[in-house]
Length: 304
Image (cartoon, rainbow, N blue to C red):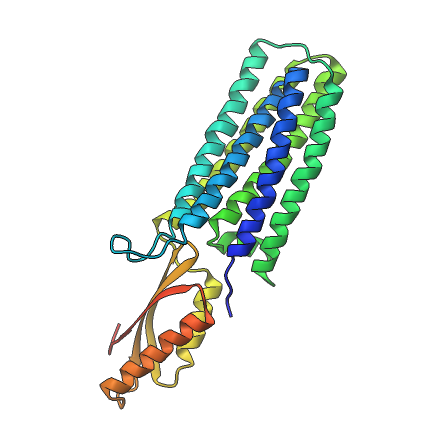
């Protein structure tokens, strides 16, 4: 059976939210005390990530709304919409602001003070973000099973986990860069390195946000189900003794649910009533064995 991923996604979002909120507050305090541009960029990044987790959870809940007359296939794609908004926020509030702050500090450098406070906060933040990243990877491992990680990342339709993973990876890179350039500025007495660190963090966030937006774009447009789900559908349909040939199978992912449309050739010896009963049984079996399927349409034909 192909299971659902709602619980794993919620846990990953919660891990990231708690870690980012605590880290954002600590970074803000350290930025005020030290005057570090890299630390301020990291604080803004963490606040943006905290807000992003709220948006991801909002999308996850809205995607569960039942279908209605205006939206007969439900609201599943709302999760993709909010994931795309998160990518835009990461690009603007995270990446562009960090680059701007670094450029400002580069033009108007300021002496740093009590750098040890910022370094301590960054080391603690690296541990907390590492915990969030490990939590996200643990939830991903539950979903991907025996599939290699790269294959899961390429084929997954779970936009929320992709966003959380991207944010966690970007946060870890940003923290390491902030720590390195802050130490460099302290060791050399040259605050320019701190400004360069802020700009480097911005570039990392821009790259991560573009990657997330690119991955979510295909889901917004309309992407087929995960290959694992498609393979399970084909296996169930071809195993039906009354199905002589499968002409075409179309799947479209709508957030957590999948729509399936299948065109088949059936045993010509069946009466109309027998064929209808067989199709109904086939649809029930597909939904029972693959809970992700929300809508299933099977059409009988003599050719494709």
